[in-house]
Each structure stands twice: as C-alpha cells, then as structure tokens.
Length: 112
Length: 115
Image (cartoon, each protein chain N blue to C red):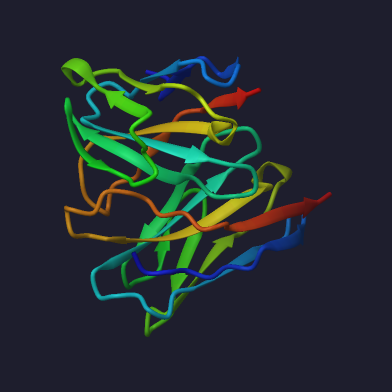
C-alpha cells in the first residue's frame, strides 16, 4: 500500500473550520483516498473517500489536489465531538486488496 | 441492527492462559476483519473473512492466534498461551461487499491486558 504522511497533531477552535492535510506522493492511479477517525475509546469510523474529484458528505468535505499527491479533509464547523485521531488511508480498488493500512494519524484537539 | 458488537469489552488474563474474543458483524455483511491496536498506534490488520472463508492472514498472526467464522456469521479470535506483548485492543470490522469504495464498520473493540 502507498504511504501517507500526516501531521501528528493539530488544534482548532470550536465552531471554526478545520483543514487536515495528508500527503501521498506515491499514490497510484487506482488508489482511493479514504479518511477514518477514531474517537476516544471507540473503534474507527468512516468519514469520507474519493478518487479524483472533491467530495462532500454530511460529516466533511474532501479536497483532492489535481495531481492527487495530497488531499485535505475539511470539517466545516468543528465541535468538541470532532476531537479524535484522523487517519488518511489509500486503498487500491483492486478487489484483491481488502485491508485498511492505518498510519499514526493526526490527533485533533478542539479548544472550547 | 445497532452495528458491530464485540465481547467481552475488557479481558484481563495471566500470561500463558488462552483467551477467546467474539465479534458479531452487521447482519448480511459478508466481509469480516480483525485488527489489533496498541497504544499510540493505528490499527494493524490481522485477518479477514468472506463469509466463512479466511482469505488473508497477516504475518502478525502467529501460530498462537486462530480466527474462525463458522457459518459466515459471527467470528471468534483465539489467542493461545498469551504473552505480555499480546496486550492490545482487538478490533473487529465488517463490510457489506468487497472493494475499495466500501467502508468498513468497526466495533468498539476488546481490550486485552496480559499480566
């Protein structure tokens, strides 16, 4: 699996937007970009994924660079409940590759 | 259905003992995964099933570990002769279908402490 690089930690003020960066310079053409987050004492939960175009859902937006070598997860209005570790993961859409390969992620702290 | 469930949530055992964990996936999810997570690290893949067939095992899954999914429903993960290095959170996930466009749904995990 291609490797991703994320900052170890970030802080943001409550009710402000948060931009979580991810670098994946060795991404291949068949890799999807997935984001999961893990709240304290819980299992990871899916946030969003994309291939080439920017994506929006009820939780977040995903902005993908034109060359696909980086992406940014955007939380439009952070709440205290968004404090978690956020993982950026590449998944090859080859059906033979099923596992998620997690890095150490970005620990997001929300300041009230 | 309320999601993936795992039991027990916590297990404390003495070194050398055997332990077994259970995972109940979301109904009709034919893919089931096991991961292990140690403190400060992201989850690491252990193995996965499609229905009752175990299709991939990580090299992390030593011969002391065995996983089953009889009848393609719930799954069990057994660790024999536990060691202190086995202390970790064991996470189970399920997915309705294979492929990189489908998310995995995780359970709350079983925290194992080996004393």
